[in-house]
Image 1 (cartoon, rainbow, N blue to C red):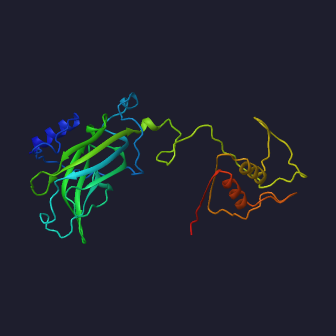
Image 2 (cartoon, rainbow, N blue to C red):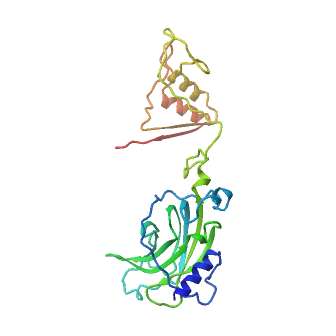
Image 3 (cartoon, one colour):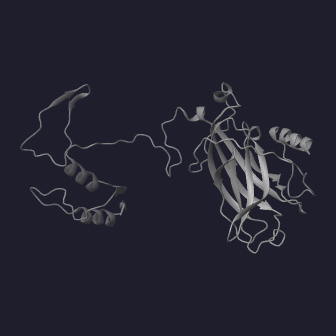
Amino acid sequence: EYLQAALFREDVAKGKDLWSPESSSPPVLSHSFSSRSFVGTPTTPALSAESCGSSYCDEFDESFLSGTVVLTIHEANHLPSAGFLKTNKYNPYVRIVVNGTKARRTSAVKNNQNPIWEETFDVELVGDIPSIHFHVKHRDSLQSESFGKLELPIQSFLHTPIQRRWYPLVMTTACDPKPVICLSAHYTCTSQTLYTSEVPYCAFPQRTACGLRLYADAHLDPEHPRPPVPTAEGTYRNLDLWNEMYTAIQDAKKFIYIAGWSVWTDLYMIREPVKCPSLGDLLKQKAAQGVCVRVLPWNDA
């Protein structure tokens, strides 16, 4: 039994696909589960960087991890029935455990022995972490009970990503056919993300040639100009918020995006010498001209 487990870890570390649903019977293996503490915070899933196989990671000790693994739990086949588990309700789900600490979990699929999850999780790994554990559980009205486990060695995906690979589950009670689970794993070490200014896991990628303008004054009285202030880049130009904002909206040709806690549509940005349209009327005029107008208000109430 221990020899089987050792051979399993060795084959998985070499990247071998041990079994697929088309084969007759997967090997029955025994796994051990550690109880060390986990350091890391799961975040929004993403899969954009390359695997940790470049020269950036060669200088680091592989026994001490510092990076992020993107885990996708696709599906499972041949899970035991509700009658086999002696329960009235059968809602299987998968719990991800790292060094004895619960990291993430999938949703529960109701009454299905071949559940499909297709859920992706982003888990940070920091420290001595030999493997990641997957506990297949079922939830009833009172409690959750684990009936299958899988230990996935870190070395199996440290340098080469795993793409939709099937693994046999170690069951608490023998059943036939053998239950299996399909996983994908992709590891990215921290050194590959040290030299980027992009904020990860956002809805939109980082753009270039963008500008941010900060305003200190809502309005400047032309009859009382500010004194010139010399800077290293030349004389500082005082900014006039309302006039410049009105001009920017009035001259917009493609889109206008506004976001804030609230949007006051009755705001008059220019009042003298001639009272111009309010913000709401101005946005309606631009929308009628074919400009894409998007307003995102929110509040914390």
